[in-house]
Length: 129
Image 1 (cartoon, one colour):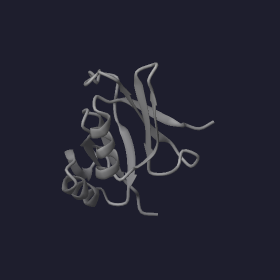
Image 2: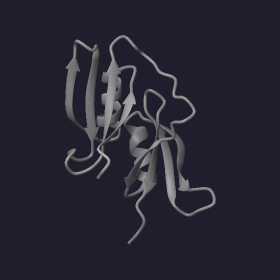
Image 3: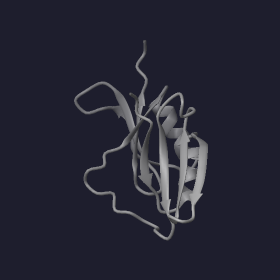
């Protein structure tokens, strides 16, 4: 077994696709409209779905926002250099909500960014081998 994807409901699909592709550098892997159900699914990721887990962005036509709730945490993304990643994300127009630095009570370097719908994305710096 393996994890295939994580689904996030988004209020503006084009805005979200721009964030995930242009700010975080993912690729749009596939997209399909479901007119009978009045929704669109778009799958984005750093690699093909056959190679790793991806994000499914679900846009329900006519719904422009969602409450995040208290159960959602974040999506984690491994980066080579969290400090450089934060600078690049800001340069591309993204929002960094926690600058890169060691996590509290530990040494792992992390940072947090926020997508247009308010979902948190944790950047975890790859540890030296």
